[in-house]
Amino acid sequence: MIRVEGLTKVYAGVRAVDDLTFGVESGKVTGFLGPNGAGKSTTMRMVLGLDRPTAGTATVSERRYKDFPAPLREVGALLDANAMHQGRTGRAHLRIGARSNGIPAARVDEVIDQVGLEGAAGRRIKGYSLGMRQRLGIAAALLGDPPVLLFDEPVNGLDLDGVRWIRALLRGFADEGRTVLVSSHLMSEMQLIADRVVVIGRGRLIADTDMDGLLAGLDGGRVRVRSPRAADLRSALDGRATVTAHGADELEVRGLPASEVGDLAHANGIPLHLLSEVEQSLEDAYLSLTEDSVEHHGHVPGDVAATVGEGAAR
Image 1 (tube, helix red, strand yellow):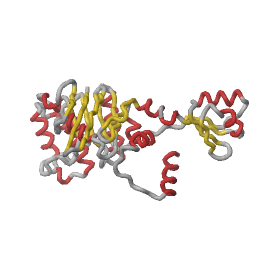
Image 2 (cartoon, rainbow, N blue to C red; image 1 turned 120 degrees about the vertical axis):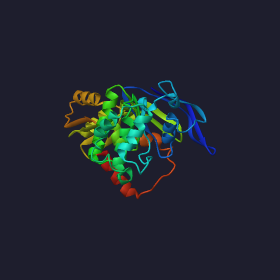
Image 3 (tube, rainbow, N blue to C red; image 1 turned 180 degrees about the vertical axis):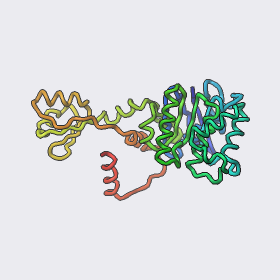
Image 4 (cartoon, helix red, strand yellow; image 1 turned 90 degrees about the vertical axis):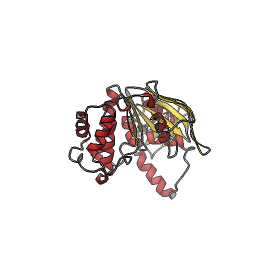
């Protein structure tokens, strides 16, 4: 439904997007990930015709966005929740979008109810909190009930209830067969809702794969095992996997699935008190993929960094 081919954008001699090619499938949530300055927002702007590519194409259903006679019926997007006329009411903002795209006026109240802004729709946008503006921007994206949706940091400014709501909303859209592209820096949220991930850095494609495949390939998978005969198990695993000891009775095994570790322990008569696959983290995979694409690195004391890393691993 969304196709980017050889997309390039040059600003003042700098390639913000560099020969980028990927597709976004219908019926799935695709996470669009990358460090600050990677070119995500620029790419989305080119999909929506807000920026003109230096080279390449960006199409929706094999058409350029500008060629749709009523684009809000085809593509819904939220790129910047502050890009609204501050003096208008929320309802007036939506009515203008509906009228310009031939959308029935009744649809305005439907989306206001859907995003939970019934009590604020008559107020001026300048009095809205960031979370309320996010909800209004989402309402605008939903006006035409489009089959394709693009969101840039949709949970920005939302409280916990709002985060859970947008998570269910996006998942529901994909389950209905719509095409959903979401850019976010919140890896935990992406891991919960995304079926596929497209990762870019310095304007170039780094990865385009399904979520399960990305996580399964991270370090070859890890297994945590606990046994009163951990030393014997480690000897049995020698040459078959990479083993790290955690205390006297616990091992972390890389390179073998839990089933094979269990079978090996059974064959050697070694009792096990714990055997589990370690859940892989999108954050770890993302950091590994983009470590050479981050332009600005902050620094923290080594002991603090180690403590934070251990906490994340738990």
